[in-house]
Each structure stands twice: as C-alpha cells, then as structure tokens.
Image 1 (cartoon, each protein chain N blue to C red):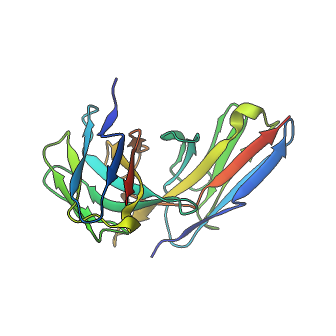
Image 2: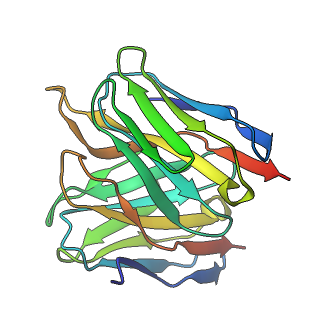
Image 3: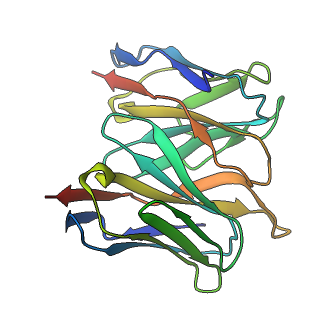
Length: 116
Length: 114
C-alpha cells in the first residue's frame, strides 16, 4: 500500500527566507505532483514530475524528484506573503507491470504561513 | 473554460438521508475521480473511473456509490448518510490514464451531516 508523508506539516516563515518541504513515499513510483490549496478553495496544480532527477521551477518555487530515494522536495526561495497556502504532494500508483496510472495518494499537506 | 463543475457547493443532510453529488468536465478527459478532504488527512480517493464505462474503488469507498454516466459526468451517491461522511468532496479529471498530466479539480462540495 502506497503511503505518502510530508514534513513539516506546519511551516511558519519570515518573508525573504528560504525553506524546503519534503515528501517521502513508500513504494516505487515515477509520477509525483505538487498542488497548492488556498483556504476554502480548490487545488491548483503546481508541478508534474515524471522521472528520476526531474526538476521544475516556477517563480520562487522549485520542485525535484529522486525516485531512488522515494523523495520529492519543494524549495521556497525568498518567501513572500502570497505564498501562504497549503501545499500537497501526490504520488501516482503503479500497476503490476510497473506502469504509473492516474490513481493518486496524497500527503497530509503542509500549511505554510509567511510573515512580514 | 468551465473545467470541472461540481453541484451543489454546499449541502446539509440529516443522518439516513440520501443524496447525489454531481460532477461534469468539459475538457474531454478520460479519467475522473472523487476524493474527500478531512482536516489533517489530505485528500483520500473514494472512487475513480479510468475511462467511460469503468469504475473502481479507491481508498475509502464504503458508504458510497458512483456512476459514470457518460464521458463528461461522474456522480457520487450517499445512500444513507452518516455523520462520519461530513467532509469536503472534490471531483477531479485527467486526460491520460498513465498519469502524465495533473488532475484538474472542481471547487468542491461542502457536506454536513447532522
């Protein structure tokens, strides 16, 4: 059974600082997704990571995937208040043949608060 | 583009009542999903439909049924609502079975069962 764990679950940052959110998963997969959720809102796709060593960057956020370590990171550079949200990683299950398909298992989410 | 549309947005039920949550997507996606979101637990998959005409159980299917009415629509039914089913329900869709694209989410249905 695929399990996905994020840490930290709560992150309080000062504006301008850097930090990293970690996403560990328990079984083989080569498909990992990062989503953002604002309070009371839907989930917005941030990154799709499709292979070992994949790195994606958008603005102050950078995501990477290490399939051997079963680890993804979401790095925040020079945080600003607008980044305050809950961030989820989600991992795609693989079938018996090792092919990833669309069934996702989500982490618990990291609640990020950026203070002035 | 409407994307994924869920109805209703809010609902209050009494224990034992039934209801159907509706979901429709206009992106010509093959796969559709129903999740529930509870505080501190992320999203958990209830049921999914990899393609029109197929449905499969997810992590937490007990107490729910689904219907993939056509390629656009995927409904979730609570036959006899229980307080433990109080949650926010999200419908999602994706275009390729192999998961090369992200899932697109609706705005959610906030369901309270008294």
